[in-house]
Image 1 (cartoon, helix red, strand yellow):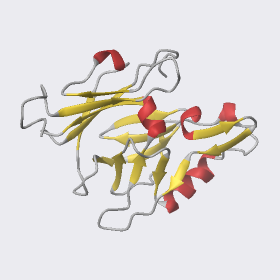
Image 2: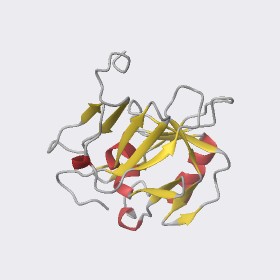
Image 3: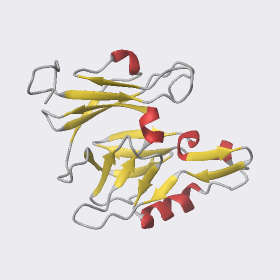
Length: 188
């Protein structure tokens, strides 16, 4: 309705999710804000027909090395999911490969986890894909088995959306990604 009434400058919206109390999360309608971006925005076509903002994943990357885990992998970019999620078979493989010790003893040695999207690696450092509470650690990847034809499907939830500023362009059926610029920390 907003688009039809010309209330929006452009038929898109952008999401900036804060990672701390030092700044506020923000949804912008009709445009996006450069001040929330620590890198250039790049666009990826929406591929799904499920109603999600869904894009194709070329592969999963660990410390820059392709894992050859994905054939026809897709991911929904979702502000309503509290973790990263994916097919249980692949999530199990990732848990074993990442090898996060429950007592956090290897936290400083953990690799970066990346997703290759349209030829670009979107990387998460260990702090983004683990839940670290005191001296206890676990991988923040949730099993989610969505059957065909809508699945299998990964979900980029809040940990991903705190790391990456996202722009959702309805008119051109695409999602834009840029490294988010946060108040307290320098981007990795």
